[in-house]
Image 1 (spheres, rainbow, N blue to C red):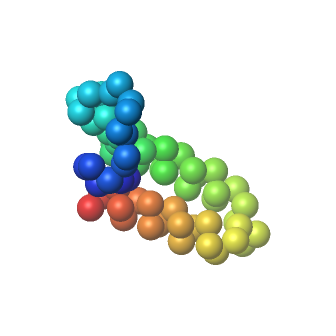
Image 2 (image 1 turned 90 degrees about the vertical axis):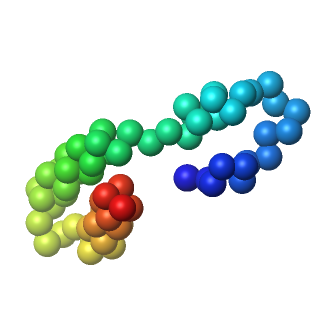
Length: 65
């Protein structure tokens, strides 16, 4: 996610509070989604490209940080 102030919103009629809402991440919901994706991946067994598992691991790590 972009850091606060990293996006150029000059000229837009949007409040700081609205920007916070737009950029909010529901970590618990995303962790549940990641678990669902992992369960889906299990159906592919050895055919699943290793990079997909690595990316999912990295996503979970960022969400838990």
